[in-house]
Length: 259
Image 1 (tube, rainbow, N blue to C red):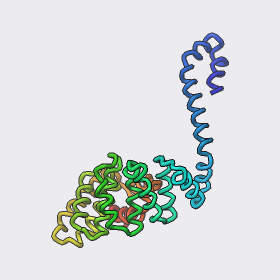
Image 2 (cartoon, helix red, strand yellow):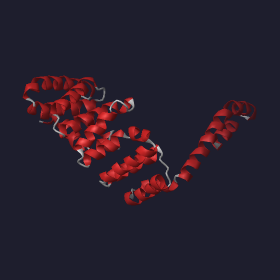
Image 3 (tube, rainbow, N blue to C red):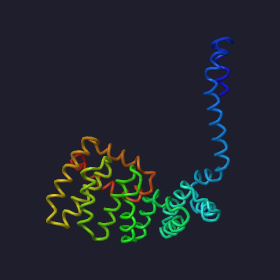
Image 4 (cartoon, one colour):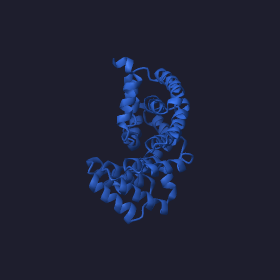
């Protein structure tokens, strides 16, 4: 900011610099305000940032538990971060416990973090619970998460042996989703799993998958494009939980390039 103030005097001279300063004064004030706010935010959350940088998950969990559960700071970013840390430590039971506490204090935060809490049920082998959880929330979530929640609902149905219902969900996503990763995952499970289980639906599922593959190849013509799209999701815990399936789907979608 000092450069913005002083540089005009050297380049424009004092008279023009004075005019320049008055014109840009609102910009400088906004920058100064942002600078102050950022520093206050950093000071308040300094310990959190340091623990995140160190990736010391057990210590970070204890800190977040003290903030969220101990002090009752049920803020969206803290709840989400604590749930993610539990999943990193493979403690699905702790995620469900956090969900139950959050549902009492701020139920809206459960809906806002549907993917995290629902994924915990699947990782914790509570498949029927995951089906109920995603079923109740797939119409409530924000638009940007709706397809992912729908995909996880279909995945939970598949794991629960509800094959026809899973097929309906995956068919809808393979045909209508704008997300190439969700389209690919849905078509993969339709072709490779459900078409083999439900023989009477085989042709329908394979035709749907074929059309989905064509759509994906137009957007992501090379397997490197698919891998890049998947890596973009690597920071999302719900995507990290199904990395194996995304890799399998990539090999299936681009098998002609691999052979």
